[in-house]
Image (cartoon, rainbow, N blue to C red; front, side, top):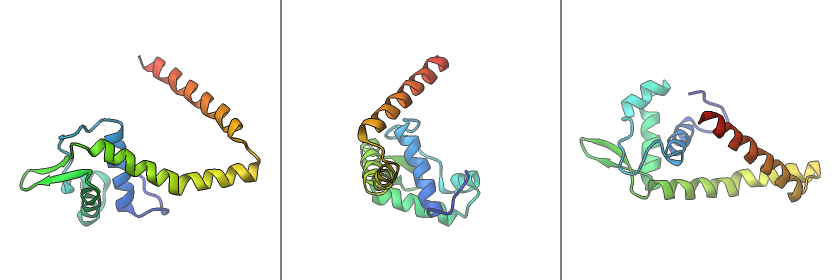
Length: 129
């Protein structure tokens, strides 16, 4: 994993976990990598990974079965999507809106770009089939 300086490392690891849940690579009830496994994989201190696990557990996205490991909660997908949506609306959208204002882009302009993006994504999916 490549880390950036804009966000704490434990939050970047949490984003990675959330992405796996949203992409449905990890389903509700699935066991996730242990603290040690994840620390080795991303080459960070286990305490950093533990902060990630504590954060995700506080949000109800994962839970711990003592002596067995951590698992995606039954409503982990919905909780992850709600958390990411809230972060997007409060952190990312204001940046997009400011850029739109500075560049004099309208919502209609953005819609054209979004439709092209969707078209490109669908073509990419067709090639994988």
